[in-house]
Length: 467
Image (cartoon, rainbow, N blue to C red):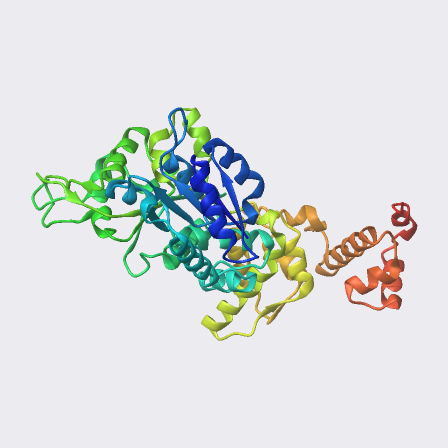
């Protein structure tokens, strides 16, 4: 593990390097004396860095100070703890550093061998207690209703855990149906505010007329119909988390009204004379590219940077197809538990579902599985059932085109059509190798030969693909 010391004093940083290197042969200290060089170093070596000691103030002419660097590091490498160093620390600076995610704040006048050793050892011990193993990450995600086992999902889970334990405001992005709301709840559940309220506001449902009333609350008799006081979403979320779902739908003229509670941490209820202090962590979600919206003057850049101290991207389901079967099995298990059934999808049925794009992502897949569980009356749901019941004008799967369903044919003919396509796909995958194809399809070579003959499949056509 590398410990990075970023300080403009060569003498001081070299002294800290010596102390850190004496702690353990597994720890290597690296000193950097120019702020911009530390940014470049982290881009190339962040995976090796386990701890950063960061000076608050740099010399005259420096384009960045320690808080600037801290903000960059916490946004891009949130899993790496940062300890701030200062020769003239103030409470205000310490508060800012803590808000940005620094784990400790040490005055240089107190720095010595024991101080540095204690800081390094306590930070290393802290990191050992965090969730880190892939299996632990997946268990945590599954507990939050985020299902799968792909590497991309593990990466998302690790980032949720790392960012969740800070107090940074977060924007979660991803296509519709990817599970942004579940990710927001997971951030809350792993964070320091998990015992306080998690308040959700559907921004797309707010209009200019009720925007301030819903968010800021109001006092009794502030307007006609205000029969009692209302805390509003900000008041309800005080000391907890406010989740602004679909933030991209907030009208531009209303966006600036969010800056005061973000910057000054205070609100004024509609009809009130005095301000009320609030302490809120903001989590927002968007299915649109907010940076592009900023360029088009559709979203306020200042608000974006206040809301996006860290970001999380949820990849679409088509980029993590290995999660599809996990999601199907989970959905079926929940259905069986709730309705006391024993239904299941065959492997062929799940494989067919896994081959689709699912432009509506997890939400569309789950809805399709639930639909089949309700419509198909028998316990076993096979590939033909998938073909028969999911092909409709609202489905993005377009099964008619995939397997050649026709209203002019019998169910047996449609079934044969599906089997023929399935065999041809496997033959192409294995370059016409009948033995490997049979093994993949779970049938004997003799059965496969009979099917090839019955469906008049030219195996040589697939052998031409051999290199």
